[in-house]
Amino acid sequence: MNLVLFDLDNTLIAGDSDVAWTQLLIEKNALDPSAQETRNLVFYEQYKTGTLDIHEFLDFQLAPLTQYSRAQLDVWHDEFMARYIRPMMTPAARALVAEHLQSDALVAMVTATNSFIAWPIAREFGIVHLVATIPAQENGVFTGKTRGIPAFKSGKIARVEAWLESMSLNLGCFDQSWFYSDSHNDLPLLQQVTHPVAVDPDEILRAIASEQGWEILTLHGKM
Image 1 (cartoon, rainbow, N blue to C red):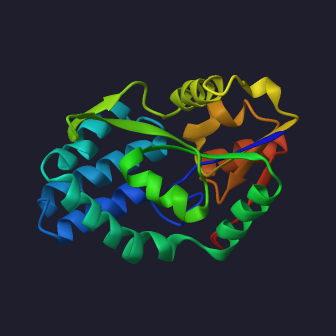
Image 2 (cartoon, helix red, strand yellow):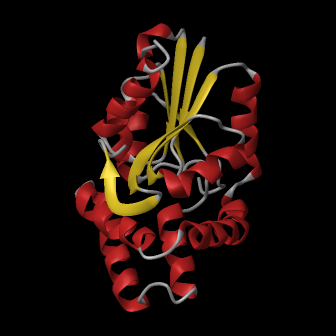
């Protein structure tokens, strides 16, 4: 059996789902645009340089989920998928996922993005396994906090290992394994698989992938 893991933002989709979700909420007057856009930009720059405090970011990013009913959030998410996400799902990305699914590999999306945002995107690609940051809930209401380790940097390894253990598996069980990512923040997990693939990579990851002889792939026509 083979294992195939996909990062989400700027890998399977040609953009960042967290940023897009924030933009939708701003359009709905659900967030203050000046405060949100400024902080989003700061966090994104920190992400690119590898200095992001994931807990500080998640406190910021999950807070809006606590302010609205699940019914309202779900309505907005449907619009989010239609207006933002599906246009970012390129034919090349859809074809790559379909190819791996048809090979009978075990396929999962592995993302630091919270599962409320990410689950419908995974399903849109036909991926039934999601390893993501989990937003905590109490009595069906989001608390604004996370449940367990965020799926970020080495946290992705911990989350993937826990997911595999739930099926009595581990990374060593697979003949071959792939992880597709655009970001140097994913180096810990990229170094755990037999086939690390840099997808439209940032400059740091591109340099490392070139040095290590890893495959470099474009799904978004940016190379």
